[in-house]
Image (cartoon, rainbow, N blue to C red):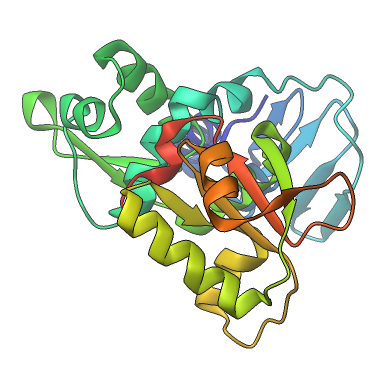
Length: 252
């Protein structure tokens, strides 16, 4: 399906094949060619075409470009496996340590996943060029290559509704509530992480919002009772998310 790593390998072969041949022009063909693979072809002077009809032919006085046609045979399984529950633990490790190089066994340990899972995730991430290998043989390590692309793909394959959400109401305003929650979490030694608008405001403090979203590890009923929160079906100003996986608390 034109995954970037395989595209790059094919493009390099095509470049070599046509380099010493006059009047030859290399064209890469696949079931569907992603935007990343199109860029690889264009940067290397190679044309492309897929079964959807997207194409680029650019040589001599010829220029033909067709784009925007959807994939007729979508296969999302490779991406789904990258963004499955256990796999996202490894993604967080890479994203939180963007310059670090890892052995696969160290990724497995850090992400609290099996060695087999870590190896499979490595292969998938390499296919999409989200990570890259350094060294060779027994000294081979892996590191993050394209954080922006990885985050973009992850956001397209994620919904916060994967978490169990419980909604509450309090008479306090947002600032008071957040301070109260932070103090309670610390005193009770409860793992937590503000998210959505509440999390974004930590990065962009000019953001205004009237509803708090936070991951919490447990004890929601006890917490609601202690803080005098009322569970509601409409009009909440506090939403607790029971995380779909404990990996959301990594690096916090």
